[in-house]
Amino acid sequence: MAISEAQFRNRVEAWPGVTLDVKWGDHLVASVDAKMFAMFNRADSARAGQLHFKVEDELFLALTEQPGIAPAMYLARAKWVTVVEPKRYPMSWYGERLRGAYEIIAGKLSKKRQRELGLTS
Image (cartoon, rainbow, N blue to C red; front, side, top):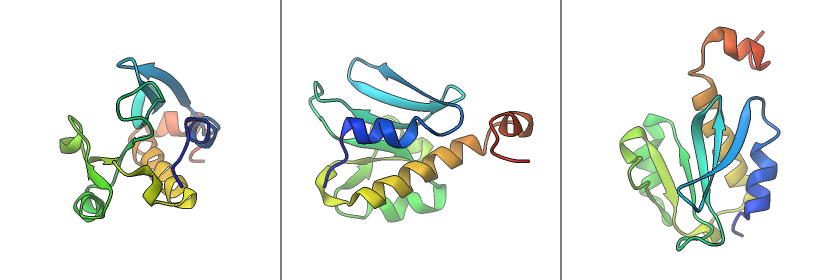
């Protein structure tokens, strides 16, 4: 089951500090404090439905060896992957990966900003 744009939007927009905007004409980009953590190729894209997200450095190689996942174009050196076969993975898998990407980027924010967002006490 592939993730839809609405499911992507609903999943990430409730998290503290997340904003969504369209970049490059056809990518719905999720950011926390203006730092991107995931992108969804919209329906008007040549690669509609593909999902791109940040992963932990130590998981990058293992994920890109999985069927249907490739290093993200232009962002692989920053340890981003692309799900090129969106129907291959269940919704729960997408939820876990998106939350992980969010936590990686949110964890790089200043401690003060993390407290402001309610991520730490």
